[in-house]
Length: 191
Image 1 (cartoon, rainbow, N blue to C red):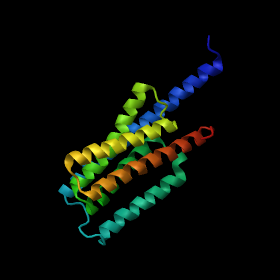
Image 2 (image 1 turned 90 degrees about the horizontal axis):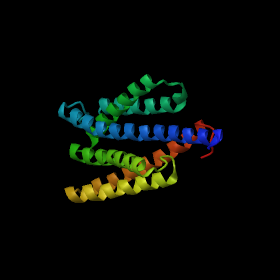
Image 3 (image 1 turned 60 degrees about the horizontal axis):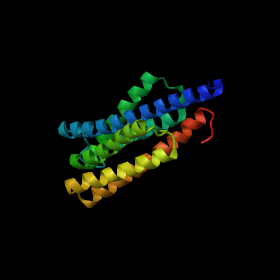
Image 4 (image 1 turned 120 degrees about the horizontal axis):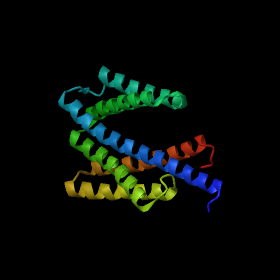
């Protein structure tokens, strides 16, 4: 029969795994939604047509201000406010990105990164990977790079799209690694 501490550790692990899988799912949906919103922004002409236009400065300023505010008061935000802020940030990123790149490139880059999160989450659930482990992050990075190769080779993308897709995968893997360490720090465990 299992002791109370072993049972408690198992419940803690399952709870942490559920939280990290939820974060992966929300991130995947957010990346795909960003691509969709960028298409909508371009279609509705909500983008700044010039890089030095006031709309572009306002969008980038709001984005940076929001990110700074989130980094300072992340522990004081409830779920509803976090959801609204997440949608706001996705919309701002979509407007900024739609102003800088063609929609087809945005869809390839953001959807590939979103697919990386979704496939990694599903593979982690199927093969019982700890979503907070280094093995999971390495698996996620390799999955993302394989997706970049497959998608960009199939679509015969240009070199800048290849480079940006690879950078996006590495960037998001680094963000997840940092987020994992932050979550472990918040729970009182050493990373």
